[in-house]
Amino acid sequence: MVQGKRPPTMVDVARAAGVAHITVSRVVNDEPTVRPETRDRVLRVIAELGYRRNDSARMLKSGRSTMLGVVLAGSELFELPRMLLGIEQAAKDAGHWVSLASWQGGTHEGLEQCLGRLVGQGAAGVAVIADRPLALEALLRTVARVPISVVMSGNVANPAIGSVELDQEEGARLATRHLLDLGHRDIVHLSGRMGAFDARARVDGWRSELRAAGIAEPRVLHGDFTAQSGHALTTELIDGGRVPTAIFAGNDQMAIGVLSALAARGFSVPGDVSLVGFDDMAGAEYLVPALTTVRQDFVTLGRLSIEVLLDLIGGGAASHHLLSPTLIVRASTAPLTARRTGRRGTSAGRRPPAPR
Image 1 (cartoon, rainbow, N blue to C red):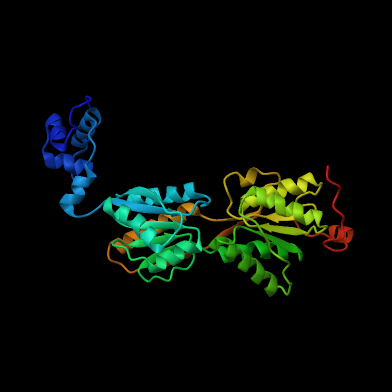
Image 2: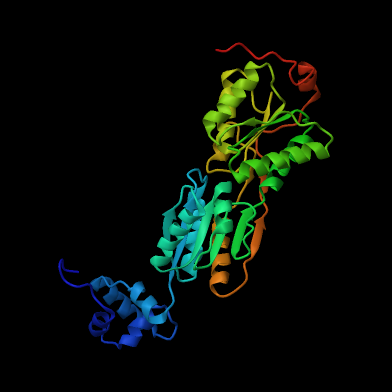
């Protein structure tokens, strides 16, 4: 397109391709009634002229929007790219596009304003990716003019809002049960930020699985889902003369910090301490040793949030989905052998090596 001139229209495409206006419309909307040679000619002209479909005009004419809003409610949304990939794929497959907005906490009025901006842009519905109880409280009181689905947030007690969640508690139970099955009884949990639903649910799962095995759980050490906190908490354990046989880290980032702290003090994984993470982040299989972890299918999570939203847009009732995680066993966990138990005597029986 020449600078300063108006953008090409569908009429321009039709004239250049030698077809009717309705034929161009059918090609643009991927309708199957156009002959292949005609479709190819129209697509070639579209590329040459740089024509772009005017979705705003289509919305005004049809009364239907092709835009879906996505609100990021929180600043520490781990594995967000994979969730957004699922959202984008599902929206595209349904003939929609996505507009992003951010809300970092505050009152429910503030969230309603954020939603209102997306509605003002023509959003037919909004998916909210939330990581904090504050978002839940705001959503409970939020009255929006469009359908809403919520992902990664826990239980939403608003009957008008659909939700999609990964079973965080079951994932923690899988991790803890795996370590118990390997013979470990001294299993410490290093939690993530307790303001997040995920962290609290993982603590509950770890605790309930230990109780089911008749084991009194040790004190939880609270971190913030970062590798730095995993390193600091593990160093705190070692310096206190308390080295458990197994550690369940709040997520894979924290597990990286655990690996670093143990290696710095001369402990091996899994020779001295078995380690389990959570998330199965990209590259977890290339850590040394490869990390045993709980896999969350973030792409499916994002895709399903859009499917729930589209059902609401179509007039369906709000639905709620709880996705099951999967335990991925790799080299960072091993059975608690008689030799190892005898060497320690108790979980705290071995003195940590002096700092290097």
